[in-house]
Length: 345
Image (tube, rainbow, N blue to C red; front, top):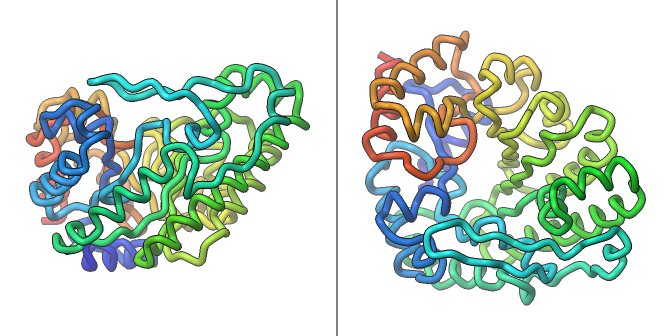
């Protein structure tokens, strides 16, 4: 992010209303390779391709924030790989991490990984380190430490169905697993901050939170997320959950979260009410059905309808309900940004 974009983000989080409204998008490997015209494998394995794809995006759309900005990642494999998960890569599909926990007693074999040495973590750090000067020449800085959340990582290590079943039937080993993963995430975020002194935000992504009821959220998510969001002294504490957001919404401010990206199935007005207006909201048109598959005119209409549903745009960054998916065209993203400008006229 540029200095000006960072200041804009901080202002919006502080409740300052902006005209036109601020816009921002989570962009990573589901969208960038296809949009840039390269294979997913080339994007993951070539520093030059990765850097150029991100550079092209910021130069094509300079008026919006891309979050976290120059995201070095390997799909869902980055964190599970540190625990020893086998990662399968395809040329034009996202990679997948195989589960390593087949029964809860396997949890006792796990140790907290060392992020500077284990799995794909060192590759993430080195990609950013090797490209830092080029990123800064473009006027941008590395602003976020990023990790998948504890339940998300657990679901890859065990399998989603198996993890949720164990959560209900075998809570003690699940807590041991979440303790190990949380300690790892805190280490991982800390290592990123140590490597890059420009970091002043954290981004945690955990859709599995959206599968929990209130009691399970309070037991298995709330305490671990609170630790994670409090582990670094940073200005921006950004949470992504584009599954059901109703359960977690009332707890977000108490967790320390001040920026939330959530499912398009909830309106901005609803989410503002559920969060008590204390959290900046990033959303919220449908990412696949409208931003990717709709016409530019449909995108414009959806943006206008989204804004109409709000009494004001304080603590709102207009976006889609989730990360930018594969297939979003330049024309549709431009239509989105133009509609935001039109709405302010």
